Length: 238
Ligand SMILES: C[S@@+](CC[C@H](N)C(=O)[O-])C[C@H]1O[C@@H](n2cnc3c(N)ncnc32)[C@H](O)[C@@H]1O
Image (cartoon, rainbow, N blue to C red; front, side):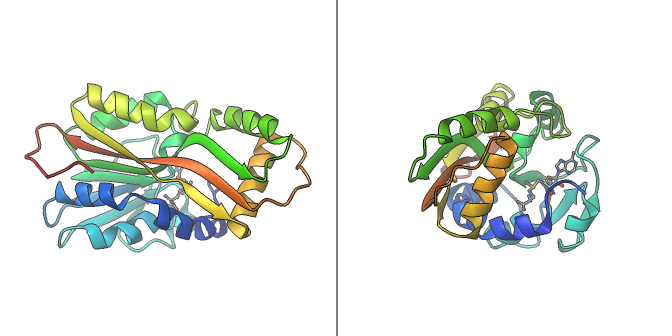
């Protein structure tokens, strides 16, 4: 068990699918050869692979890896139960959704060493922006406490939280990738995902929930694409 339930991943899946940048996915796919082996890190139930598949060249395979056997059992084969703390399986390219804000700067450096020379597409990393409508006086304290929670240890060192997308871009450029990023915000209107997301934020913040019905919540995310500089031109990055 990872603390991420299949119900939560099912609830957020449609919002993730709308939010991911299709421009970055196309640019990622242009960098791949037919038959490329892609590894989806922290794949959960395999949602990223299902979304990405139509963009990919022919015969590409996506190996879902995750530490949570229950979630992984819902992903299509091929799949591999493995902790991301250990060695990553070899691949022609790496992808993830909603993972890199959980990892530390040290994990990111180790990953970039292992992924050297490979295209990488890391989607849906939180960037710290939240816009709630209507606003309530208690919101500032809640989001401040939540930001601290996002930087806590999540199993792979002190989590980067909202620093993750900028940290990945900066570190990857230093190591020889072209890096592009695009907004992949959730724009949630009243409904189950808005309620569950805000309830999770309030719980993580450890503060009382304000009595207010919210109509809209924007959660800022970014997708990050890395293409090795030595790659032949693959067209626009995004
Ligand atoms: C926020 S969920 C995202 C799941 C999936 N990518 C999606 O978008 O539906 C993060 C995933 O990372 C996995 N994960 C987190 N830390 C891990 C670790 N140290 N080793 C293996 N998997 C890990 C969790 O089990 C979970 O499935």
